[in-house]
Amino acid sequence: MKRLEILNFKSPNRAPLKVEGFLFGEESKGPSIAIVGAMSGDHINQLYVASRLVDYLRQKEEEGKIIGKILVIPAVNTYALNMGETFWPLDKTDINMMFPGYAQGETTQRIAAKLFQSLQGFDYGIILEGRRDQGMCLPYVKIIKSGYEDIESARDLGMRFIHYRPYSPIETVMLQYNWQLWETKALSIVFGKNGAINNTTSSEVHEALVRLMTKRGMLDLPMFEGYSSNIIQPEYITVLKASRAGIFDSVVSCGATVEKGDILGRITDALSGEKLEKIVAPIGGVLTCQYASPLIFQNSIAFRIASVEK
Amino acid sequence: MGVIEEVFSIDLPVGEQFRIQRCRYTPKEGETSKRISIVSGIHGDELEGQYVCFLLGEWLRANPDKIKATIDIYPAINSLGLDSITRSVPFYDVDLNRIFPGSKNDFLPAQIADGVISAMSGSEIAIDIHSSNVFLREIPQVRIAKSQEKTLVPLANKLNIDFVWVHDAVTVLESTFAHAMNTLGTKTLVVEMGVGMRLGKAYGHQLLDGILNLMAEEGFLAIEPLNVRFPIQSHVGEVAYLNASQPGLFVPSIEHCQMIEKGSVVGTIVDPLSGATLDEVIAPIGGILFTLRAYPIVYEGSLVGRIFGENG
Image (cartoon, rainbow over all chains, first blue to last red; front, side, top):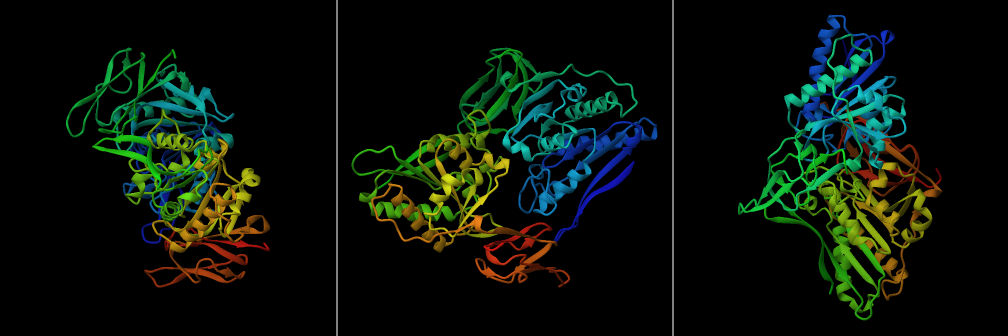
């Protein structure tokens, strides 16, 4: 294992920002993959999975099980992680909105540029992503339709769901889109709840990463098969919104199979305790996502259900 | 007297509502479908537009007989942000101006965006007033994506601003309020002026004159057009960006909005710990310093100024 300094950025008043990568194996022996962990300060689960993976790969390298080249960068925005911030602490910009980066630009553009430079040339690229909202979700693969996406490598993760959808304009400045454009088979795994660690979810993502690396010839290991992934397009996801605001109580968990008519959650008035709403499944399917904060806004998305029928 | 209307509302969890309000002024007599929207506070740390909204409301209250069409004033879109000194939408940490046109089936910021679009679509013109953020001070300017140059520059020239900046838009700007509204057929101008979290009275009065002039020329007010300044046009020169080469404390050497010669010192970056001067920020071209850093802590890459040089 080589411990690489991806970038070292001086601060006016605090210790330098150091982004480190952990490199295993050799490119000449097989394909290559780069895995990027926490780009935001609240992506703790992503940090946890990536750092566990480093430890795992170190052991496998000692056992001679690594064939290709594997780079893991557990954390990019360590400054934010260290102070409970989500984005770059000074100007609150999101590093994952700065790709492909600009070496002569503003600070987070420069960070993105150096990071992107270190990610060039890999056959596969995985971004461990947190959510952009207050939800928690079943781990899923996110692939955007850029024209360069590779569904087959996504299938090899063996995860239950692949969310395959058109990209929004804002995603053209994110890592997945640009990485694909630069000819790496890039995808994201979105999982967990921001700011928290879930061991079950983390293990599932860890296994998926090891499975992909095994199937794609970077690791020489026996490995259980995963799911035959369901590719879900946006029209097969039913969004359930809270019609009232208040205290939110979910009675089911992500991953549960629900039937039409099942009660999924309740909302009570935060001051009077009055029972305001029961959220009922309008369709059967798998609960892929739920609101994960005890206080809910009116019209917030309380649940998402993936179905095989519209 | 304008009529205050609530155009969007969402219940918050504990006994409160998030709401967007407008003050609507209509002609005393006759009806008109002609409508203009004056918008501010999409970012919670930008307050210059609130003052302009006040000044405009004050003028309209005093001159109700001059109103020829519907004039809507929206001073506070991100009201939670404005009341908590938060640029983005609190709780979600999302820049509202990167989520347009929004959606009814997405999280709160997207629903707010959708509500804003619903309320304002159908307006003939919209003026979206921003300050800069807390880091930079800007002269009054309108920024226009190149694809909308032909439609919007003639309107911007009526606004009594100092600078019209036509730029190559990156795709991310397709997520802004202005892009969404322009796509829907509302000619939308984005004004940037001043600095975040502060109020510049002079700029407010300057833009008020511009808005009154534009409304006079476009048939919203029955007044004579005002004698307004004609802005510098970006196509006659180039914009140079000044980025910090070192982390430290940026100490400007000159005032904002000054003519500056190529090679002169815009400011220094110093180290408060050692007492050393780390770098001098040198003007790469001559011209007007139309952006100057207001918040002194800088990292490598922090924008400290922009110069527009008429002769390149």
